Image 1 (tube, rainbow, N blue to C red):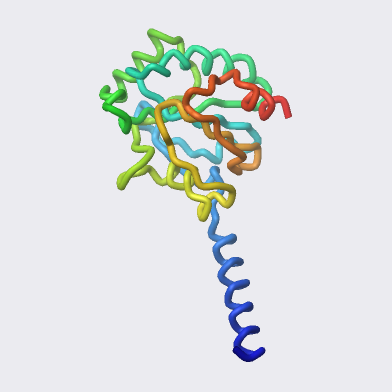
Image 2 (tube, one colour):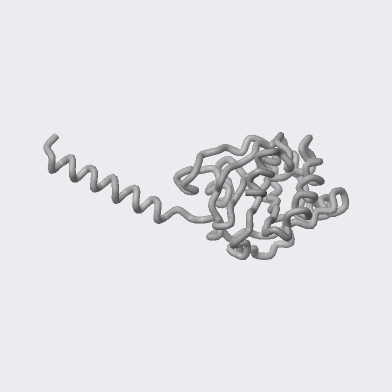
Length: 182
């Protein structure tokens, strides 16, 4: 391979990398639908730390709703929000309608943090936000797979993914508290 050809390949790679970096979205570029069917523009959360959680009402992890609410109440005045995304991807553990989910969360756990409409968090029908959360080519940070209900994704004040906590990790885990108190 001659120098001219090698130079050409290098320039092509630099351009490709540059274009892919420019097309990467931030969390704030997404619009979702809340549990009441209303549009919810995630850019309204600029400047806040956000814990994104896929939830389910009939899961062994469902009691985490209590600690998620407690964490939200404790940190909401410090520019923090929990966003719940109900999903029925794991053994049919979220079979309810949006109205049933909303009532369940309110009546059983006193949830006051925002709950979004039920979505898919994996598979062929994955929601675009979760595609972004789990694909390094899109989020610029890491690949991951939603392994079960109550996986927690941490988004910084600038709309960038900074990490995640597995489903069994409690909302008050050292990892989440270190991130919140940073």
